[in-house]
Length: 267
Image (spheres, rainbow, N blue to C red):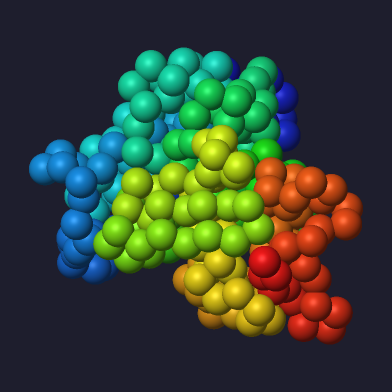
């Protein structure tokens, strides 16, 4: 572990070690359960954990390996970004608050180059921080303290959505968009769009149900698999999606707001 620079850092280090011990105890109390979903190859899904806290990262990595994932670790943002771009893992677990290049900047640079799914790992409880991460293109988040079982479940859910088409060979169209769910591609007026996993899933949900008004809670359960959660997550992703598919995102013609309800798709 790197030298502590101040008393506050020392306190944080001791707290992290206590938390890591709790996670380790949690690991010993339950049997190992396989991830239980098909992958596109025989290889285990590869996860990159980027966190400046080696004690916590070690526990997370060991648990994910026991759950059937191949795990690589980076201790800082710059190294994590380099490894992610060089090796293209299936998913990145990314701590937001790191010295030097923080998780926000890592996520921003990743999104410029790739659509690798990102699960944010943060001790911050403020809604603004979660929204900032989601705005940058993160697919999900887990707030510390968390159980490693929850993190593994979130990782599996994001990977399922990233790899699983809505239906074999299904094509959806509307509002100048064409979706090939088999190829996992979206085109607007013939031009291929770059969408994150959640943006793609939201769009498929809307185009498969044109005219239907969805409550934010429904979308949170349908797309994210959460029965309870922060509906601002949906709001952020809808806003980002509009920026990519609408001529004027401030006056959307297709992905419209239904006051007092949520959103619907109008072709």
